[in-house]
Length: 148
Image 1: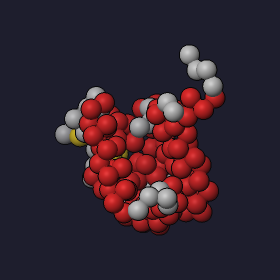
Image 2: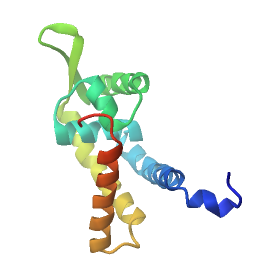
Image 3: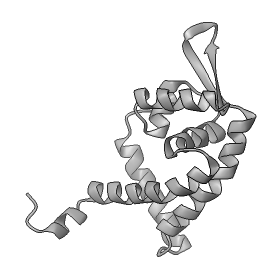
């Protein structure tokens, strides 16, 4: 039980969630200028950096529920940012990949992501940023449920 309000800020998952909510809110307006949402940018980044994948893989890597991601991908496909192609001729399994327009949208939006990251980590020097990222990766590998 929390006895004082400050204790909630000492609860790491709460603090991490607040930080990411502020990051996403901050980057949201910059992404609107490029014409993509935060969810679309997550998908664009995963596809641009990791290559084609299935919706199941993309759901895990973007941290977006599959039903929400499916609607996001519908909009992205309509906008010409992605292609969904049957895998091995089986229409139940589709590989999702970027189009040239999707790659261009990713390249246009990525600077906003970097700027917001730098804003978020402004008080850390390069060594602290590196240590912080390595610590987060250790936590991530301990808690993840998938091999990717």
